[in-house]
Amino acid sequence: MRIGVVAAEAALATFARNLDLDDLADGEVDFQGAIGPAEWPVFSLVIDTLAEAAGDDGRSLDERRADALNDLARICMAAKRQRAGAA
Image (cartoon, rainbow, N blue to C red; front, side, top):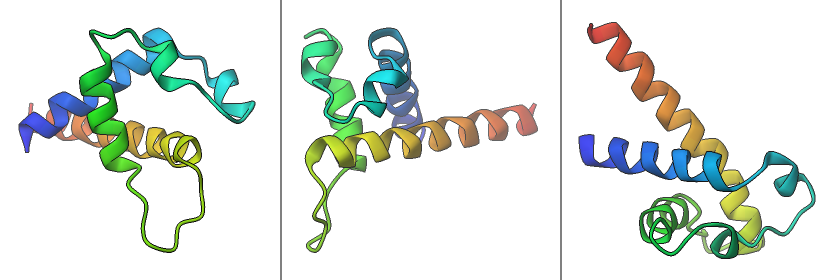
């Protein structure tokens, strides 16, 4: 479980360094173009895992990725609260 949290936190930090929330509001975002090749593998693994489409999901990959960012933020915030509670 800890490796998942570390990967999620790394992906969220990558997003924060490379993308702007205003870009998401405009619709289509070139995630791979905005994130450098060194950070892309971990970011795409985490985001695309969270953005996996269900059989009846009609959203585009970029739409699912944008929603996955919300999930990613919730995961990181929950992990932070859990660590703070354990201290």
